[in-house]
Amino acid sequence: GAGVSQSPSNKVTEKGKDVELRCDPISGHTALYWYRQSLGQGLEFLIYFQGNSAPDKSGLPSDRFSAERTGGSVSTLTIQRTQQEDSAVYLCASSTRQGTEAFFGQGTRLTVV
Amino acid sequence: AQRVTQPEKLLSVFKGAPVELKCNYSYSGSPELFWYVQYSRQRLQLLLRHISRESIKGFTADLNKGETSFHLKKPFAQEEDSAMYYCALSGRTSGTYKYIFGTGTRLKVLA
Image 1 (cartoon, rainbow over the protein chains, first blue to last red):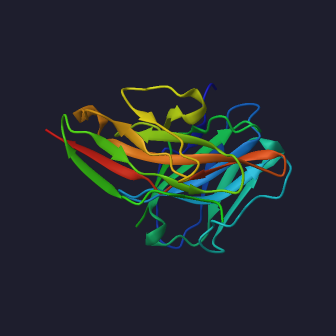
Image 2: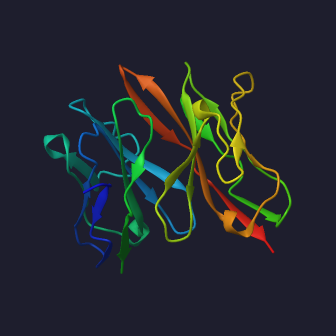
Image 3: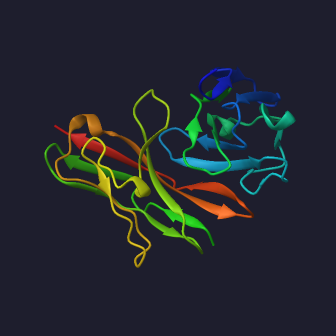
């Protein structure tokens, strides 16, 4: 596709369940970012991938959160044993190695009930 | 530490009034600075970048290296400017560029 694609668009899950969120970046973009946006709040950095380098995981809020990026393309953000405070919109963005512009997906709205 | 600071979470102005969204950054080097905007129910998208020195939708931003600021300004706010605004920098780290975003400022333009 032409843009960053995220799936699912919406996810409702029960507290304690695991969820996987997917991001398909723009082809050729080496950098991929995950952010969290809580209701009415700003962006919270979660994790950053750049090519084959070790990811920057400094923003992950707890060890229940993990992410991987396979083949330098698609990324999956996994949240284990979800809690109500995990409810938010999870945004993915990608950019080129030169970082001239970040392109965002439409987000996944996660609701933990 | 590399950081982008947007001190205001919410800024409310009346239609026709000037608006200034503040952004300060901390970075050891020469980063590129950007403003991104998120309108209701739309994706985050690039508004403008400092190297282009352009005016988009009446908005301008000047990079002040001495004050390490990149404030976004518009002389006459419109209701359609109501949105979430994010300041960001892209800085070179180990041969590649990494984005750092501020936490955002919500602009409300009142009729």
